[in-house]
Length: 198
Length: 274
Image (cartoon, rainbow over all chains, first blue to last red; front, side):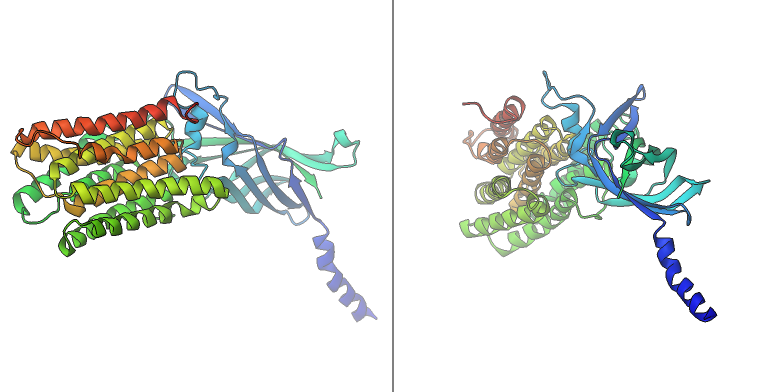
């Protein structure tokens, strides 16, 4: 009888552990990656991507998690959409082969399989950024994190949201136009994100 | 060395001049003048983007073909004199090369757009190579002028179409052809062009222009006008005029056609009204 009980516990333990893994779908309407870089050594220039999708999982008990984000590179915007007297807008230039080359590389992705926790909350996500066909490790720092019922659905939907930052050298991904003086090599990313629990 | 003037002007021109002078002084019996264009293009590529081949992007495929073009050109020059069949074979090979370069991008587009862009790219590259091989390969001044006009035209049109990088590559081809032409103008003697020159200059400039159309915003009709630049270098000039004057006149003819393409890219980026 005792052996049977131990056997049942052993069999059901992985199921109990699996049940603690929460999976979330990223809210594409409130998940917005922004970027900034130096411009001509005078000012910091900012832009954003208007469309990002993905999913993440989190296991608070085991303090593990995963993250997959896909950013549509053609959705980038710096707010410059009117050509006026110029042949092309800044956004059109940024979408071209000099920078994000969105026709050849319509997406950039971030994939993580390791999450470091600080207390009960994720702190640093170890993952890789794939940009222009090149994959390099880029850690993501979670600066703000909160989970709870979504007030917009009277608590029927459970969500996690927050902010995360990262930085990388664009030259590592082969994006070299304007280096070294016109446009900075160091790119900082800042992202607001939401995920709805499945 | 990060100055664009150096990257796109001084460096490729010096590389082309060195190669053209070596060919002119030491390798006179060989038709290797086209190496000047490839040297100029690769020099700018090295400074602007670096010479790496992984991942094998559209731009890097163009670099691969820029290395293959003079080899094929040398073989073609040894194998046969410029004939219609030879020109047609090289033109078809150029069209196939264009489709190989751009297929991964074209395959992601809807059929109508893929046919338009792929067709324009293949036709433009094939015409430039075929016409160059047929009518310019045995006339080094005409070939050099065509390379100069095509390179500069493609470069400026690319810049107007939201790709300064492709613009620099195009201008580098122009600088290479300019170096090839300048050595002839200064010495008052022609170099041999051959398929080594025409295939290299026309293939590289044609692929850069097609890249500016598919990856950036060069209109397809501007690409087709750019493909006509070598025709300008076929126009008549005084046969007994000094070589430098012939080079200047033929370059002006080429620039006029290239200028028309640039004007289309500048004024009618979203279609010709009417």
